[in-house]
Amino acid sequence: MNWHDIPSLSALRAFEAAARHGSFSAAARDLNVTHAAIGQHVRALEDHFGQSLMKREGRGMTVTEIGRRLADQLSEAFGIIASASNVLLDNAKNRAIRIAVTPSFAANWLMPRIGAFWDQNPDIELELLPAGKLVDLRQDNVDVAIRYGKGGWTGAKVSKLMSAGHMAVAATSYMEGRKIECFDDLKGARWLMAKAQSEERYWVKTGGIDLDGENVTVFPTAQLTREAALAGLGVAIIPEPIADPHVKSGKLVVLCVEENSPAAYHVLTRPEIISPSRDVFVKWLKNEANT
Image (cartoon, rainbow, N blue to C red; front, side, top):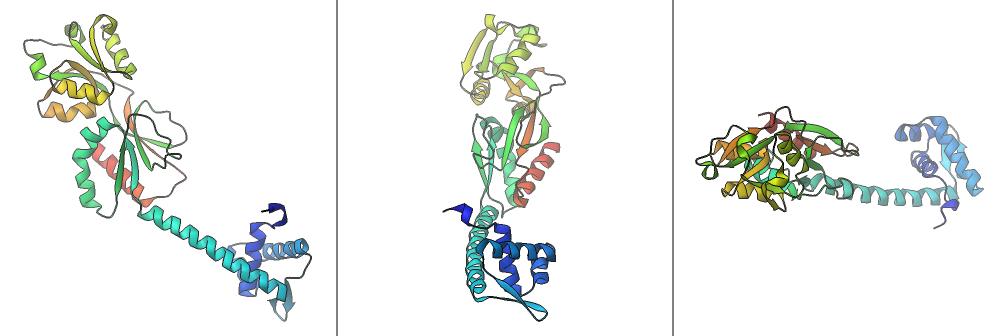
């Protein structure tokens, strides 16, 4: 297709509307532009094709024979575009909301609460995408991402969900016979760390413990460190919202708590996308976090 031979889409739309209504004024109202703009577009098309497409007849406008053929074909073409667009819009309205979340957050915070969302919103389908890696919201077609950190992510609308300072925790069975005030009493313990826990390691170091000289077992994911802690294998560093249900159940004991931590869980969405269902889910998330 040689696009240089095809007039602007705006001019074609203006002519199709003028031909359909038989009036520049009615076409202007239809397209929310001025009467003069419609006239300019039609004259530009006539200059482009070197033929008269519309002519004045009494107080109105009528389409020439060649103009009628063009108008009919444009109406059909715009109808095809509208149908294709409506199909995609309907799919977007009806498809599941795609939510990227870390496995730990999904298992420990979201899943115990998600039943309440389904009860309140039975018509909104959710597709959870648990993964440890960061996703590209646009490229991966993700509606909502829940990320842990200090913020600063670009290319998305970011809002804080809840604070999430670190906790040093261990199972009650592991702590039997130990008197723990905080880090000073944890020297010599078995530390359960994930590969990517650089901030957690830094927090422990600020507490006076150099993990390079300690007994450290490294796991591929933070979720496995939590499971190891629950199994009574050692001390793990876990964000407070993830540790909280296990602490309340008595399965884990809090040994140390990070004060005034800048770390938090955040909700990321695409600002250019309008999705009422997504917004309902995000509002529910924030209400749950505040509760």
